[in-house]
Length: 166
Image 1 (tube, rainbow, N blue to C red):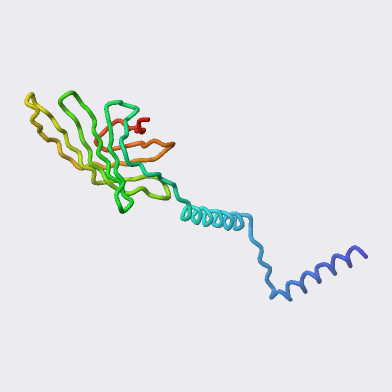
Image 2 (cartoon, rainbow, N blue to C red; image 1 turned 90 degrees about the horizontal axis):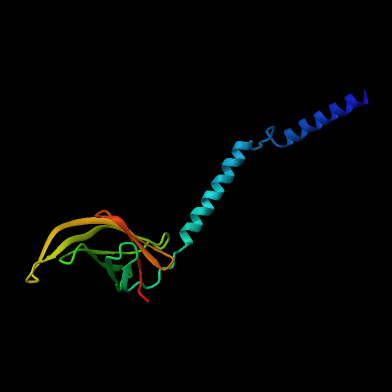
């Protein structure tokens, strides 16, 4: 009997507490709590990404390709913070492919992407007369990683990995 009275009083107490709170008690289910936590993590990640910047040093100067060992690149930093790249890829003693590329590095990713690279083939005959052919527009990217520039271009099947000569 005492046990039954204790249970009844507990139930009545709970009813009174619920009534005082407006008759409703809201609790988050496990999935609701998980969703709220994921939203908080995502918002924090987005805020961090907005404030994080990849430091790109001045890349001006001559660069050599470590992979093919047939390419060289001259890089110039412009007054607006963008870069100009002139890539020479030797196909033979008389033929060189040349790319002219410009763009700005994304401070959040450290990647420079372009859609308007200028590609051409320069051929020299026996009298050293130059013929330019194969002019096209290319797209690609430069990624600064560990002091080197990785280059990918739609016209070149090989990635270039450029470093500055010591």
